[in-house]
Length: 317
Ligand SMILES: NC(=O)c1ccc[n+]([C@@H]2O[C@H](COP(=O)([O-])OP(=O)(O)OC[C@H]3O[C@@H](n4cnc5c(N)ncnc54)[C@H](O)[C@@H]3O)[C@@H](O)[C@H]2O)c1
Image (cartoon, rainbow, N blue to C red; front, side, top):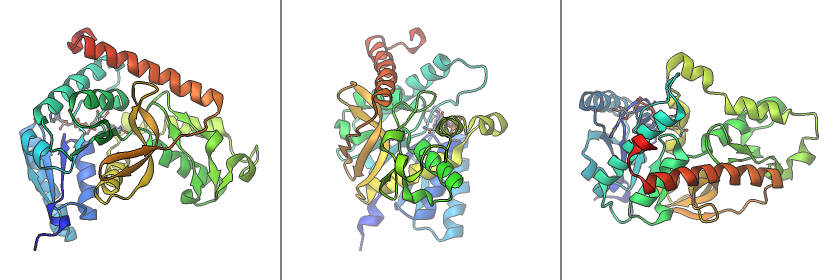
């Protein structure tokens, strides 16, 4: 008899470093019956299918991996994850790498449209807030069904860094990094708690150097990217976790990039995740300077989005 589990499919658009790491984590969890890999580089895609099939065989996973087309991904998948794109390479301007990924996301979303009505689209390619906003405009899905990995990885990382400094388990620290992924991320210190107690009370001044930790969190991957070109494992684990929240309708609260009407674009705020994607946003009583920092960087994303939507030629962007 076909169970609900056997019918679940996740598509990964982009079978590079990040897509491969996400697939590795997903296979280990046996979350879906099938993983569909889509890539314009056919040799790369097929090599990943074979290598990842070995993971399934070796671990006794219930997940099978196969190559697929955009059409199959859009029509047959419960969750479609976009990791296609070019990495930001040293010496390349932000605008150059962003413009290329804008063009890639436009093409892949259009190639997959129309999506299955209940498909959830998870955007990972960078700049993730802009690309999630763009995908949300183009996918012809309800806004709640399109979200981005946003600042979930940074939030997990900052909890881990604090935990290491104070000797308290990371899962007893409730702390979010919010706003726009990357240089302008905002650690929401004002709402952080330890064991339900406000951070200011639980860890009085002097116990942690907030500025140093925030800086370490922001630049944690810089050396890794310089050394090995990519940071696939952390984001791969985050993708697997987000897929589980959706497919299992877990209702986890996660800081993911999603449409915030006040800003007219997608930025990360804690949201409840379930089978239909964003179930609702959790309103955060941010300190004034934190709120202003989020609004300022959201304003930049919104301007970039408007320019792309007005003038669809990325070269001019
Ligand atoms: N949001 C995050 O926290 C986070 C973390 C790490 C990486 N990333 C982003 O993930 C993206 C992928 O990084 P990577 O290290 O895997 O790069 P990669 O170069 O290893 O892989 C990208 C893959 O996308 C494929 N591709 C390009 N255009 C495509 C298209 N139109 N359709 C299908 N596939 C296409 C390429 O052939 C390649 O296999 C980058 O944009 C990177 O910045 C995001």
